[in-house]
Image (cartoon, rainbow, N blue to C red; front, top):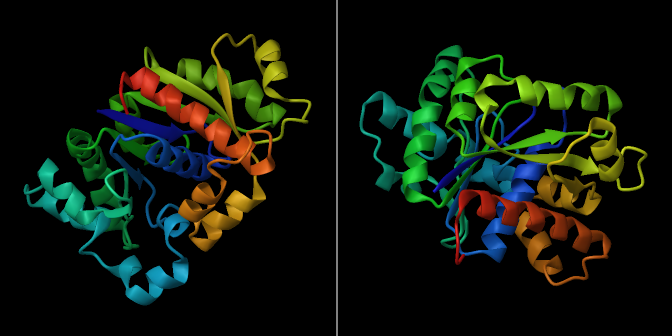
Amino acid sequence: MARVVFWSPETNMTGNTHVAVAVATMMGISHKASCLIMNGHFNSRKIETSYTPYYELKESGALENSNIGIGALIRLVVSNKLTADVIKNYAKPVLKERLDVLYGMSGKDKDQHAQMHDSLQYITRKADEVYDIVFIDLPKASNEQYIKDILNDADIVVCIVNQDVLKLDEFFDLIANEEELKNKSKIYVVGDYESKSKYNVVNIKNKYRIKDPIYTVPHNYLFSDACNDGNVIDFFYKNINIDSKDYNGKFLFEALNIAERILELAKIKDV
């Protein structure tokens, strides 16, 4: 059992959700671990609309249905009725017995926002009891207590940065000085990566004297389109056996590297 958080120390980093979706989907397709992907954002639909077209979710009423997803679980927390074994009843399978999606909250008022902050840590802990891996796409920075709490709870934190020298100059210092990350298993990832950039992985490691591995999720407009169209699962299945040097193959290969590193750090075997 492992809680894996996708997070950036600065609010202006980009690509966190795409990294989370890519890695969680690859884990579900390539391994037998039972996984849940959810977000810690309020009123965000980026994860669920990556797996189901937005218009389908809207027409079905799923986006406003408070009887599914995290909104329903929060009500169970508030009434002291949430147990680990019921969580799967409120999540949507997108890869049978491999990957479920927990829909986000539809509400927009401050009371619901506060309830999510108060309940999210407990929900992730309960989910961790019934899934091998819980992927959490967490808001950037750590200026709110619930973010600190979930970072502190995490077994693995995937720390995401972009190829921007101003961000890179601060990134590793921010990670090193984040109290909740002390002695925590971390995976460094450059999101929306361009290998031909001056700030490629080799140069980043040399410039900032980083000894730990740095992983990448390459820029891929076809994957971005798949996220926008709700066709991520189709994108992966169509490309899963493609050559790793191909445009799409390189993307999947890098996502697989991160998934396998997560398994290694989490000590999950034979999956």
